[in-house]
Every structure is written in structure tokens, then in C-alpha cells.
Image 1 (cartoon, one colour):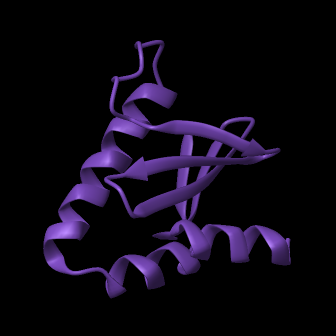
Image 2 (cartoon, rainbow, N blue to C red; image 1 turned 90 degrees about the horizontal axis):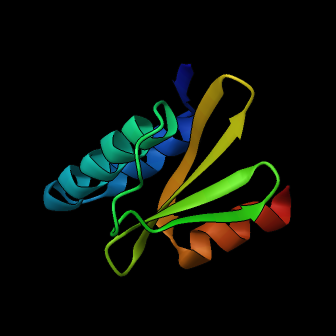
Image 3 (cartoon, rainbow, N blue to C red; image 1 turned 180 degrees about the horizontal axis):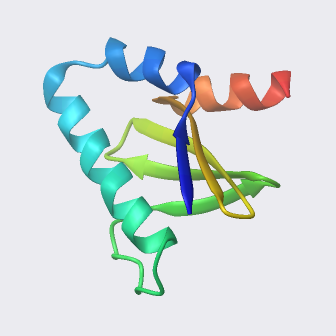
Amino acid sequence: MRIRFLSSYDSGYRKLPPPERGRVQQAVDVAIDYLTSSAIPPKGLGLKKLRPPFWEVRVGRGTRILFTLEGDLLQFVLVGDHNDIISYLRRR
């Protein structure tokens, strides 16, 4: 599986405080492990299908990671709060 991080993801990631960056990276690692294998998803992953091809992973109470999964490409699109995700999806 190919994995790509878009510049919109990188931009949001850099704006996060260091402790939150660690939690985001951990959630990304768990999501990648789950999506690239046949493992059972961890209970706290918070994986949710939004609308094709977009999916969301929750990181704690406020932070979300938006990604797409199409064929063999897993693409991380955005990291931000709920409003950031909604705003991004409305523009698409």
C-alpha cells in the first residue's frame, strides 16, 4: 500500500502543540497498521467513514485526521478539529 501525506495535512500538523503531535502520530501509526493488515481495529481508534472517499480518525476529544483510501493509496489529507474537517469537505 502506498501512503502519502498531503501538504494540507503537513500544514495542520505543524500548527499543533508538541504533545498533540505525538498523539496524532500515534493515531496515524495505528490507522496505518490497521488499514494495511487484517488486524482488528483497536477500540479507541475512532475510525469513521464520512463520504466516499473520505474517512476520519479521532485523536482525543478535539483533533481529527481526514484521509482517503482509494485502491492501494492511503492519503492523509488534513489534521484539525471538527470544524476544519467540515469546512474542508464543504469545499470538495
